[in-house]
Length: 306
Image 1: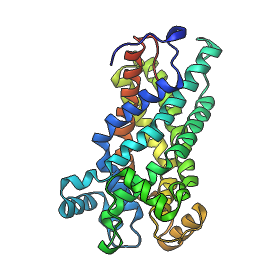
Image 2: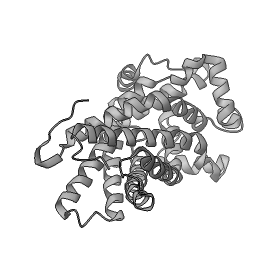
Image 3: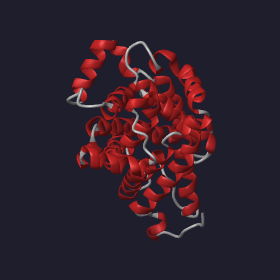
Image 4: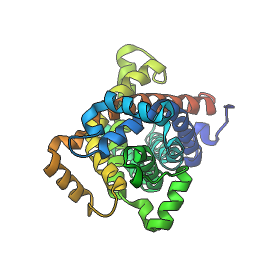
């Protein structure tokens, strides 16, 4: 990536920051996508049988046994599409708003934590709306192999999935589950990006490390991932079940949560917490670190990402 000399002393446009965020996210999916497949198969499984009962390790072994190692990368094209439609907005909008606020307030008045939460929430909600078709494709393709053979949809790619859903179920079906997606994306981005940004400053102050160093970003993002996972997993479970449902079992996110808790207990809302965290932590660490490094490199050291 060639260093770029942006206007206004390091200021980047929303498009530039979004593109850098998408590239960082796509690079990260090669490492983290298998954990997404495991998480989705656990979350859409109901009752005491199947992926929900096997746990993370059992689900992994079952996927490899039935589909081979490449089964763990089922639906990766949807993950790439998701980074273009969702990751670019989540990272790009937050970074753009944060940089704008820093420039408006001046170097002696950094944005307070609550403002960062609002920025992250706004970025996540925007990304949740734009990225819902890719999110739906990711859920369906990742969980397809767990369905009985007669019920499998056998999508060829994320684009094929989106086209077939629009044709067979109507264009609006691409935004099925958009409400829990937006809630989940806003909650996740608000807690993750704000906490990571705040901790980056504090960790650097406590340790003497550079704010953009790999070790600073690792510590800050790891802790932020745990916090974000606690708040976002219930929305993730509801979103996955609504998007994967055959027919119209659930009338909405509240109905899905109510029925799921009634059948399986309140713990179902945090089902898949471990693979979700095991995926979220490295994904966040790698993507945010790459985003930071790409931005520093792109601006020639004149500006960072978070």
